[in-house]
Image (tube, rainbow, N blue to C red; front, side):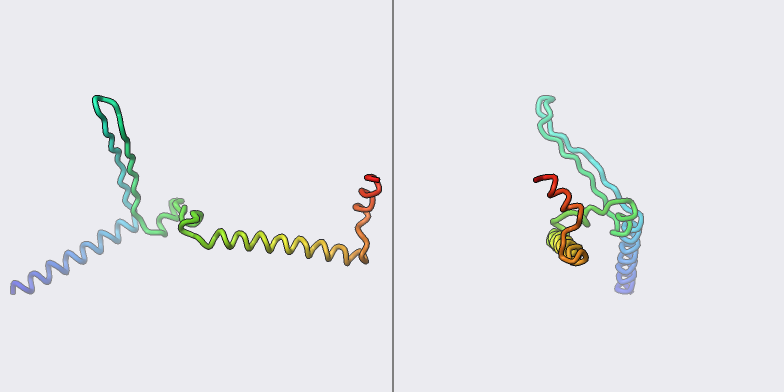
Length: 119
């Protein structure tokens, strides 16, 4: 009978721990504190601790989504931005070529007028 009681206690603790973790992740937990080290009333060091424990969904809900924009957590983002910039440049070049083709190979009148003024 003692083994059955131990099993119930362990199962109860596990269920209790799961419930506590679920509640913390759902609602969030904030731990804040300051540590100050002084010598002869001269402050030598101050450490400010701010800890938030919550689920990713809750963090996004309250506006904490810094990991989306941090290069250390999204290393592929920089490469994707470079690719996007390169594609934008290619599109701009192609648009210029299309504009030239649509004017039968002649430059638009606005540019010709600007050239005439320079001479």
